[in-house]
Image: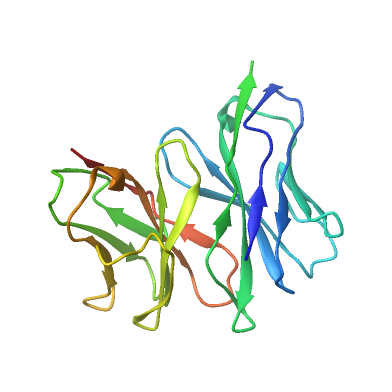
Length: 118
Length: 114
């Protein structure tokens, strides 16, 4: 079984500053992937970044980076230079590798609401 | 153009009525997932569908729910007799091809049962 924990119900950040959203996970799977999604008030789920459990380097996608610490089972999202448009709900999720190559269902955390102040 | 399109975007239905939610991938996807998000809560897995059959389902996915791919492109979730607690956002998700790590989500269908 997989479990994702996001302990920050809400976070506030000043525009142009960096913010870290916490995510810890638990799994018995040997190979897995960690994902972050953004959900604005309009409701859609927007993929942000992915980290494979076997990846040695932390993933980066533009202003998003994933601070992956396997021993601590954490996969924190770092958003640099926050923008007003970053205000949204952020979900951490994970999935096990199935059939050796593809990913199965996603298990989500409870989410963190990020508010960016001007 | 989104990888996955869901219709309708919003549906209101009376308790006890049947609803069909639709998901259309832009290209030849093989894996499909349905998730549910009750307002303000986390996203929950319902069912996965691969090679035209259910590969896994959660305890939420009871006999009231069914999925099918009737014409090889559309992927549908049917709720036979809706209950008030079925009110939620329903997301279809699909990787582009096996091995791709991104699960593309549709924009969701907001179902309201009255």
